[in-house]
Every structure is written in structure tokens, then in C-alpha cells.
Image (cartoon, rainbow, N blue to C red; front, side, top):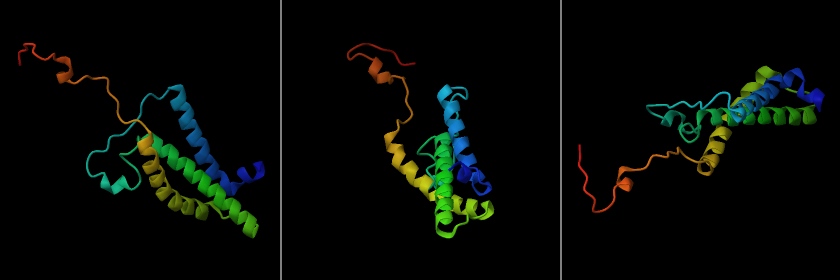
Length: 137
């Protein structure tokens, strides 16, 4: 198994999974703080990928995980069927093409399960008591 994972044909996919694990570890430790990107403008262009449904860092982690897993599974299937793996210059773009729609599907599936933006702010109407006098400025 280690020989398969560390084969030169799989370095790209294993690196993607390791990078995803490092991002998760940094976020779990809390070193990086909150990193997110607000995209203003027409989000329909990237909407199919899930941008706007989940934080960008979470989308990146999902993409890296899916890219690595799809690539490794594809290479393993080819190794079992043909006895050889594809070179990384062919396998990586193929895994990229397969992992982009899979990332969009995963984002659509995960978005309702995760909490939205939260705020501890109380609306002004909730602070006012009925019948009390108040002045507007």
C-alpha cells in the first residue's frame, strides 16, 4: 500500500490529501483565525461549484479531498485492470475534471447541514418594551 501511495504517479493526489489535512489541522488548532473570501458581483459564474453556499476554505478542503481520492481510486483501478498507472500529466487533469462537479454536489449537500452566519446582535425592536416612551434621533 505504501508503495502505491508513494509512487511518482500518485504524488499529486497524495499531496492534495496532505494539504487538506494540514488546512484542517491549522483550523482546528486555531492558528489561522477565520479566513473567508466575500465575492461581490455575479456569483452565478461559480455558483455551480458551491461558491456562496460554503466558506471558501471549506470548499478548498472538499475539493482537495475529492481530487486526491478520485485520483487515487482512478489510478488504483487502472493498476488493477491494466497493470500500469497513468502519468501524472494525464491523471491529474482527468481527476480535476471529475472533482469539480463532485465538489459542487458536495457543497450543495453540506450547505443545509452547516450553520449560516451567526450574530449575537439583538434587533432594536426586541429591546423596546411595549408602551414605553422613546425618542427617535
